[in-house]
Image (tube, rainbow over all chains, first blue to last red; front, side, top):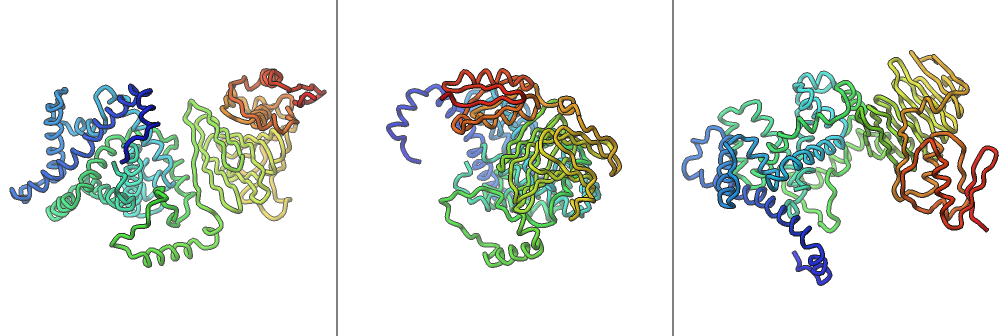
Length: 171
Length: 347
């Protein structure tokens, strides 16, 4: 990135408090998202040498690494440690820049996600909402929409990816 | 954080992560687990997308619960989508980014696929620019939506409207509830509103339409609305009814069930909010909003004044406050006639 221009530095002076808050949040968040992923990835690779065959459940393994890293990092920053190793805690921590904002951020995140869902193509939206809100299975949804279970899954995948990409833009 | 990543690569990784996530929920066998682990190890992007997908999942139930349509409404909505792959790009591409071709699908294969889709879609696809949009309200809100063609849509509570604008037609489907349509002029593209089996054809109008258990109700504030059962036919004689300003009709089971020639429009539009709130709107737009509520017609005769932008909040059923406000603007004169109010410039 380029250095701030002269005009910008004046703006920084005037808006220092606001900007500081903003950047603190951004950097805290940036660690959570990016560094953690890098670190998880490296540990995943390292595990190879110690016998990847032993990893019976890759997903559980992934989240164990992630939650351990978060705990280490929290200790490093001398903040309250992550309580327990509940998956929700880990994910919540990943998604929010700081504890104080957690509740607010979750609300905001859900609202944004709700807006993204509303903007999906009609079928993607219908399938996603039927699956996650109405808790209908692929087959039941397929019957209602007159498409195969396979297609239903494809629509869900498409919808999830669109939501994920849309949410990533807020990160 | 994702600035440097090619959007197509990102989407592909997101789709793979979604697939793995769903498969994981169904349970993986040993071979699948090995492939999943190999996929995770392929790239930090895969790790990040998989964690992101898990995080997304945590919010999906709550976010999906915000959707205003019920299961049947969603099925109706899905049925409005063409059985053709959408060609519009799913991500806005940075204008400076040069097109990067990834290994995988050669460009000529993509081009052939695009041509094939266009052929399957046929003429209808080529004529209707796909810009689908759906607007809906919860039980506690009334919402207005301004569309590019100048049409203003006000949604009643607990309502849903699918907007399908094409080059030959502007189409709305009232999926549930009701709405007030203030139609922007566009003679080349007739505007039609599907209400269950009924189709309303507009002729430059402000009208209210609601879905009823067995049909529809329509109240016309200004202009004229033609009601059809099914799509509009060539001959006018087959239309169910022509409604003029001030008239109200109910259709049930495909037949006219009620017709009020001098309807109480205030009653039929009682759901409209009591306030008119606007920001940086032109005086002409605000005057038009007041017209929806009936009352004395307000004419803005001065073009410069009509284009002046104002912000504020007024009682919708009391245009006098708005007229008084206009009277305070420099150089503006209010002329009260027998059945209208004219706003002109002082000479």
